[in-house]
Length: 401
Ligand SMILES: [Zn+2]
Image (cartoon, rainbow, N blue to C red; front, side, top):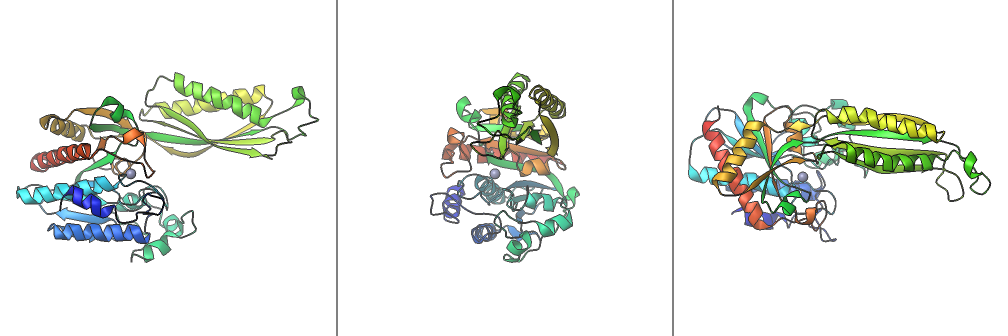
């Protein structure tokens, strides 16, 4: 077997009627994909097993030093693509095969498929379980949007929802190959991306409160129209993000809840859900304050009440400088151009990277598309990235103490 054959086989698992792939975490298709992965690992002469959370681990034994981990995920969003996560796991398998065939001694290396990266039961459930980061009570109650609990879903595969903390001294570093899910590499004509940092994010809820009145009788100059204020804020917010001078900064208002939400009533209340992301550590807390001040300002001018609430906050995760350098050196040694870029999306590397040295290789996404059946990456770029990963791991397991 090789990567192309693995990928062709994996594409058969969870292919859905709508032309995409549906392997939600701990579904029948997801379990089948993981069982298949372990079979491939055993066939390649690797130690292949599940941890107690159901994360799949293929291991090439080595000297007594801590292991280098190569990870990603096999689950997908519903009607997602074939590449997201899958190529990273298969790259790990392929690298282990090549290392085993070479017979060269070195540190142990593992290929891991983390469960539930797409967050059916919460963000990065599998990798966070491996790092022991879950609140046990919350995990026991975790439930998917479709109503199935994590406990029920895991029981189908013979696992139970609990932390499975791994001794961090057994891990030398973590590497992940993943599709970019954006347009930067394709536009730059570059096959290899080396991720500098994974963006942190802040999510806020802003509630503008005015007064619901009859749309026909309330005079224009006497209205306290919550939507008019929220709309003014929306464009001012976009301008603030654009003017902030941080090219990695993103700001999005993705949620608008209007009340009473009726054609003949002046909106009395509007709740906006917004998020900002950046890889710059100082940007987010500073910006958060400016966003709230901006909303307060506009609310006052529009005679509206304002309530702001923090929903979620996560700081950026810088990727390990030495591992980035190793990937860059390997790309150069193999004659592939590589571009350093931040990741606006979070990955298991963003979870692992808080506790162990971590780095990521990106490959270009055709049209920047992902989480859809059209998701695609040129096979030659995947091959190049696997070669770089293999070269880097070969080097790192030799020299890394
Ligand atoms: Zn992914």
